[in-house]
Image (cartoon, rainbow, N blue to C red):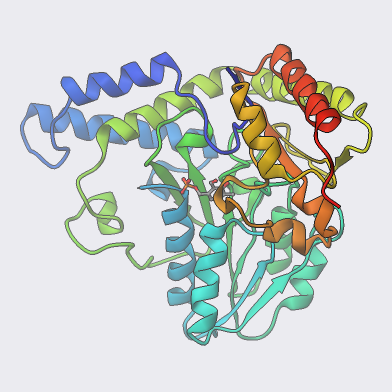
Length: 375
Ligand SMILES: Cc1ncc(COP(=O)(O)O)c(C=O)c1O
C-alpha cells in the first residue's frame, strides 16, 4: 500500500493504539467518579491536557477537548459572535476555508450575519491587508485558517492578529492542517481561538481541542450538561480518545523537527519527479511541508484517484471532504475548469517513503499515457 493522503487522515502508531487499549480495558473509570479508578481517569485527562497545552505553548486551562476539528471551528465561531454581540454581526473569513468553517458561516449569513469572503490570488495566497481592509466598526469576528487543506498555503494569521490589536474583533484560526506541521505557538499566532484535531497527527478520529485565550472571555458553552471541561463542553470525557491524542502529540514532539524535515524532503522529491510528467501543473504556493497539489489538466481527478486506488496508491481529489464536486478553493483561485477538474492532492507523513512517491510517479505517468484527455 502507498498511503499518500495524510492531510485526510493519518495512520495511528502502535504506541497510540496501545495507550488507548490500556484506557479502554484498565483505566476505564469515569473521570467524575470520586473513587480511585475515577481519580486515575481524571488525572489521565489532566495530564493529556497538559501535553496538548505544551504542544500549543499555552496553559492547560486554555485547552478544551472537543469531538473533532469541525466542532472546535463551529464552537469558536458561535462563541466569538456571542461575546461580541454588542460590537456587531459582521464576519470576515476567506472563500477557501474548510467546510467546517465555511458551512457554519454560510448558515450564519443566511440568518442575517453580514459576511466578507476574502478571495485568494491565483497562487492561493491571502494577505493580512485584505483582512484589514474588510474590517468594519461592527466586525465581531475574523476567522482565517492557518494552513489551507487543499493547497498547503499558510495564511498570515499572526500579522492579522497584530493588526487587530486594540479592537474588540475576535480572531479564530482553524489550525487543523497547521498543528505540528508548521511552527507556531498560541502566543506567536496571537489568535483568540485555535482549533486542532488529533487524526491529522497520528491520533484517533473523534477528538480535537480548542484553545481559548487572548481576548476571549466568559465563553459560551458548546453544550449544556454536567461540569466537565469547566462546564464549557460537558459530556463524559472520551478518555481513550484523549489519551490517544496526547500519546500522538508526545510521539510527534519527540521528533518534531525531524518529522517536518522528512515531510518537506518527501515533498521536494515528489515535486522533482512529478514535474517531469508532461503537462503537469503545480497548484498554489504550498508552504506547508506535508501538502502538494498538482493538476493534470484534462484528466479528471476522480478517474485518477480510482485508477490509482486499484494499485493501492491513495491520494485525494482536491479535498477529501468535497467528493465529486469541483473544489471551492480552486474555483476561488480562478483556475480554469480543466485544470481544477484535474487537480489531485498528495500529502505526506512521517511514515512516507520515497518508494511511495516513485509508485505515484509511475502510476500518474501511466494514467497520462493510456487515457485520452477530456476535451
Ligand atoms: C483545515 C481543516 N479544518 C477542519 C477539518 C475538520 O476536522 P475533523 O475531521 O477533525 O472534524 C479538517 C479535516 O479535514 C481540515 O482539514
